[in-house]
Amino acid sequence: MNKKVKFLQILVIIIISTLVGYYIGVNKINISWEKYKPSLLITNKEAPASVQNVDFSLFWTVWQKLETSYYDKGKLDPQKMLTGAIEGMTQSLGDPYTMFLPPVQNTNFKSGLAGQFSGIGAELGLRDKQIIVVAPLGGSPAEKAGLKAGDAILKVNGDLTFNWTLPATVEKIRGPKGTVVNLTILHEKSESPLEVNITRDTITVKSVEGWIKDVKDIEGIKIPESPGKVGYVRLTQFGDATNQDWIVLINKLDLERQKNKDFKGLILDLRNNPGGYLNDAIFISSEFLKLGTPVVIEDNGKGIRNTRSVSRNGLFNDTKLVILINKGSASASEIVAGAMRDHKKAMLVGEKSFGKGTIQQSDDLGNGAGLHITIAKWLTPNGTWVHGEGLKPDIEVALDSKDQSHDLQLEKAVLEVLK
Image 1 (tube, rainbow, N blue to C red):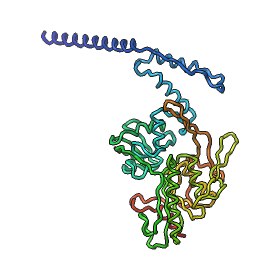
Image 2 (image 1 turned 60 degrees about the vertical axis):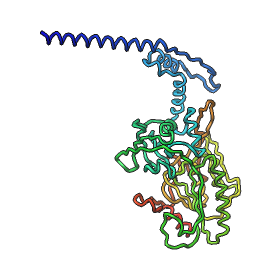
Image 3 (image 1 turned 45 degrees about the vertical axis):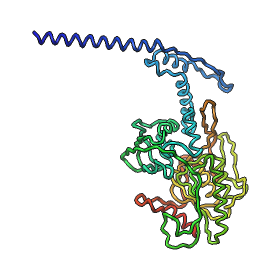
Image 4 (image 1 turned 90 degrees about the vertical axis):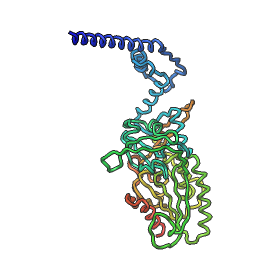
């Protein structure tokens, strides 16, 4: 008898608890809904003159249904909903380089071109809707953690990245110095993903560095003889300070070259250079090509082509040149490399480049937001479009993954300069 009484008591307690929980839950939702006031003051709603016969009724129907029916009213932020709609509009074009950048993401992009930001130090790209590493910056946390050009980033802090936009990915990976981000990556030609924890740091990108050295003094190569001196310029990006930094270095190298009669030639290292400004690519190319020489052809897709040519006198247009490229060489890097090869000014050594053959226009929209629009594709002077294909080097050389201290690509470039 006592067992039956205890059972009934427990059953009554369970029923009462369930009813109380349901009552509290329902009333809590009702309270949150009562506090929600769907207020949307629409300003600047005039459509552009070019927009004709576009019915927005479906858009507003969906908006209204979300306001009316979505259970968590706290998530209904009109500004975020508008931003999401704009992002969706740009993504509908299927072009990863045409994108809307909300204020934080726009600031991140500008910081990268300015040469200083807080993060892991890796340029990212999109390939088949998958986030990939275009190039880790030299000496960056990303490089020290083992990230390589071509690596796929499958997850960020456990969240799958498939179908993520580039700006959203950058925002997730960047963060304050000293904090940690967890990445799940997949190396090329590997079947097993790898988890890495990377501590963010302040990344300062020095876009240009270089020297003239006796061959025997060049680190990373194994050439027994010392038949002369070789110049070397490493270009990491085409950013805000690139042209000024370039002028300072190239003038210094020119003075050194004049003092050395055994100077053999110059190596331009564009490996892991993800690109940047188109005008910078023309400026750098002008150092090695004569005045008036075509550098790049812009094709706006409407049958109009505009050839951009050398417009200044360079100091090294009579110098033997070898260019180093790899799968991290993209965009402006490919413009320079392509122009040099088409004009038979340089030999390309290394690995096939990334293959980005489009040009973007960057617009500030106010309130910190920005918009990048692909306005044209670019072609090498001979009319080659590298998009999705990349530039194949004249001499293919892979790095020795087991011996990081031996730079086989640089070694081959030096040997070509000495010929």
